Length: 194
Image (cartoon, rainbow, N blue to C red; front, side):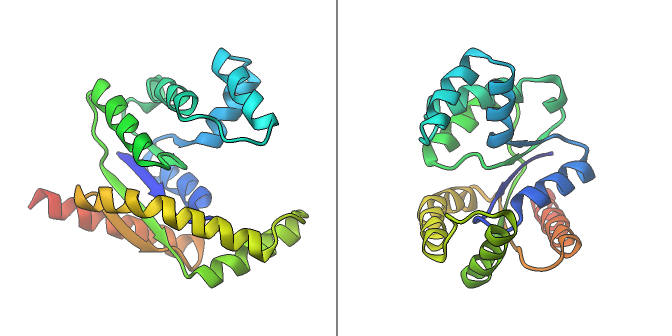
């Protein structure tokens, strides 16, 4: 199982990534986790990433891609993985394709968690309040959702064109959404084997 989760901020990707990875017995891999692990181990890539993170800038694709390539070559990924937060651009899609080809692997499915933007804003404002994130105002959250929509639409279209995309309603309880994901993956799998 090689699975990719896409979805806007607040749609529950991180929660579902952990649940699905457990269910399928594969590691959940997020770029944030990869950055933190490399920074903590003081790897060359980690030191490079830390400079960007401390400056409040995006880590360049070449650094992110190199870290991801190293992570996917680790033994626990041999039978599959679940990616959360990568790829974010079409260039990263091409890099992921190259990494998988290098390893003789293919992506099995891409799940897009879909949710009403107003509900996502409500969720994120609650989370900001609960976590003391004063900078997460409604305007900032709406802008993040706009950027996500603009950047992710091409990825969703790319994976839909490859017949890999399953769109799932991301609203509901954790268990409800997890069951929708499993059902969508089963439906996609059965349509491929017909």
